[in-house]
Image (cartoon, rainbow, N blue to C red; front, side, top):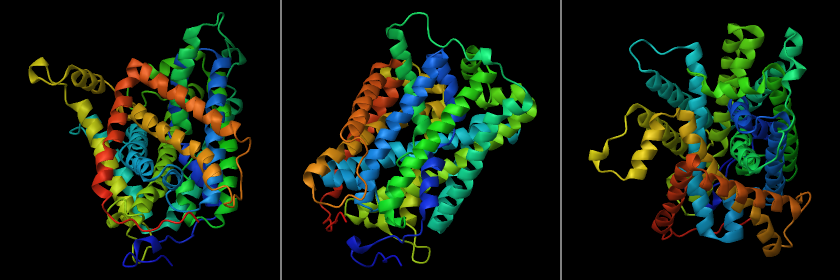
Length: 497
């Protein structure tokens, strides 16, 4: 039984109710969301040749796997709620750890939920169009809000049920993707000639630029790989089940993503895949919808809309399940108000942290929709030129895209710091038992660190993504005054084992 919050904060714990299958499904089910149905169009636009497309997906997968293999060592070594927050606290001290939790709440996790909910609503409107009296953007925002509220309610009521939903949903979405891959062979569609050109006629700097831009989208498609570590306190036998979930989960994801991407290109020529970005309507980037329509007509679009709705809903559930554990752990350490680590007296869930994350995600959804609905003010309003420019760009951008880079930049900053923690902890705690040691150490974490630095630099260099990235930086820095506001609270001891 979990200790009630009337006890000292350091003794508040969560029950171990998740088994190995749930841990594996948290990895796979959290990652497979909207990305594989939308991102391949972006990749084809930036890298218009099959060899480069395959390379981008493999590199993105290997990059993510390097992070997962490293994170698995720390998750098995310190199986406590909070995941990266705990590792950063032990490696670098309270300020970086607090900034991670702050960024997780304000940017990475809540922003990810808002982004995935926006993708859910984009497909929902294909099945249930807005009523005549309701604006389409408002309708999509309302649907996204309802989806966030639903998964929050499920996870407030029961962690075990949240894990069970993750298992069921992962089975459905993996089965759906395998059906997509098999569809051209079952229907007789597709042409091997579409898998060309293999490489560009000439290599140049523009190829590297295109690959880096494409990698941002691919990493979004792989995002969620670290969701199992915040749940370590609630996973049975975490020393074995966390590394296994990471390794088998990433292997599954790379194989499925490569197969699905090649299936798209087997059916559609590269220019047609890239042009899916420019189609209008609620499935604006839905290369998967174009693919299914090409093979089985209108019913294929309906089917893919249902599949993506189910997929994104399960990804939302994974975020609602994993994300609040960081805020729970911070409050247990005295770095947030104790309200955040309240355990529901009968449900034994971190209900307050789940609720807080859902409310902020809904706030981001409302803000994004407002930027689209409200035209930017003119020069007479007197707002700074860069803000007016950003508002004007957002006004023309789908809700999904507004939140997209905002999430990736902030998440990558702290994924980089968390993975690099393995070097510090090996030096700082050399004698601490490590049931699993990172395969390929030190080269595996170094690969992740170097690739993260390249990615962050490219996002800052790229004018299109710079404003969202800088907004993310601003929110991270706002965490500093928040830290000093809360640091006067007496933090209880936080053992690492």
